[in-house]
Length: 458
Ligand code: NDP
Ligand code: 2IT
Image (cartoon, rainbow, N blue to C red; front, side):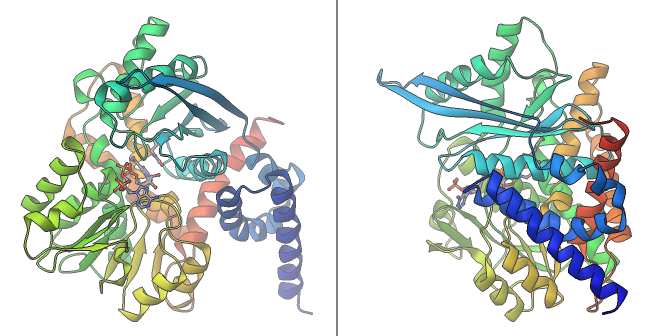
């Protein structure tokens, strides 16, 4: 057996036994184990080449959250009925800075989902190069069809407990699915009242009271900036490309906005009920209808097809069947599977850029990579949101507000830098495509690992 082959066999054995250990310790946590597998497949062979990480059990420590808080959230609806939900905060890793990551309000929320999101956040936040640790939290509360007053009472009850565990230098939450400016307003207001201090404890705040320009836009814009870099690195460009997007929330809206600005044609948006396909392309005016529909009227994407005759609503399906050059899955985890990947390849899709966290299944990811489709993992391509959260924290510390252009320029330079790091650690495959999955995982891992090494056994 050659030296390289025996190294591969050793790595495979280590991977297998590491994953068995993780599965045993975290039974039934499917999404968390999936996220750990994705990273470990790349990082364990790398650790083999750098034994000091192994000796100090860096990866074993990284998969164990520093702390998890689980709490009861009682609240009352408008009719006086009592309800109870479960609240969580997973404080994953603080080697690089205060715990940082969003809160998700969605009925599907459970510990596995929040641990996967917190784990992803560790490497994503590291890639931004800003001093950000990692965390994630939320609740199985469903904000859909609730009145503003109900959402406010829920947020206040949630914050009554969470306020004990967060702070501007310890843990700084933000938004995620189901948590936008409205929810952050209610939570921040209650926090400020409880602790009697005005501090930068949330990001994604309203511009009127400590938020940053570009934070609402940042995840979507960042993802498009990243894809722009990727395409020019592969001697290609965004202008004239046909793009399909899933979701119609924060990430999807601003991905569409930047793609339109950079002269790509956006064909689809979606929600949990289905997708809309507009063969003429969703332009600025149509997008502003969607923003109003989703953000203010809290309506359904199918209403787009009711307003624009050429737009079709396809119920109960996801947009991956629509022929495209570029795909931006921007709704939720595991929304693009192997069958979808085959469909994308059949339709000659050039690249898939994760706007959401882990929207592409492991099988679909491998299939895309094996067939030379560019694959940008969320921890790199959607890092613009948390990066701009980091910039919001800096502004709050300075008690200053930077100009819109300044923040946008900073965001762009962070995305360009993440791209460089990915290229450095993710050499091109035989198909001539950069291995962004490898690049992002190793680049993200190294910085946290080095910090943990230098800080002793924590
Ligand atoms: P929003 O709540 O603003 O929008 C979510 C969108 O995804 C909605 O269109 C929603 O449809 C759809 N969606 C949610 N869950 C499901 C589901 N189970 N099946 C089908 N569709 C679903 O969330 P964001 O745009 O903020 O987040 C989208 C993704 O991006 C998430 O994976 C999030 O973790 C990730 N992300 C977000 C960042 C941010 O800054 N906000 C930063 C980085 C990543 P419906 O209304 O029908 O539920
Ligand atoms: O997944 C993510 O990176 C986010 N939801 C944003 C986190 C943040 O703290 O801005």
